[in-house]
Length: 89
Length: 89
Image 1 (spheres, each protein chain N blue to C red):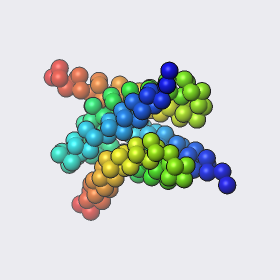
Image 2: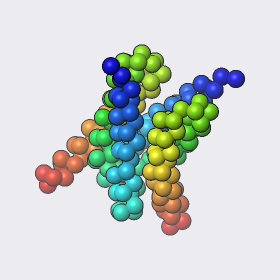
Image 3: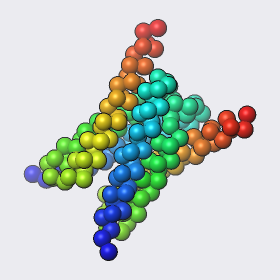
């Protein structure tokens, strides 16, 4: 049996899990309980995973991380914006 | 040159990124801006990644996902607890 399917389901879950988070954050414009160091470090890590996938020509890693970045770059942007706006008040 | 180091740095970043999130959530006991479907789906995905790693005997996948689960299981628990307590009010 080919167990690769388990990896594809796992990757689909950990990737698309972030879609409801992005929708919630965009809708509510409230990210107070999300950690700034978390989103910055996580998004940087996703970018490094993408670079790793490109070096290794590993297409599942490339595709999953491009998708994840599409969710986490805007979340990170919203969190940085919220943090800066609070510091300015 | 061995590019595996890029993967290890990427995995370390995406894994340990979650530590400040766990600390913040435990300290503030506020997870309102974190999405319930996100944490449940993400944690389920991490568990599947762990199963995949065990099947493939891929030790970096096993180690990174055990660590991630150590951060995300308590975050998920706190989020479910918060959601249930709000529904009871």
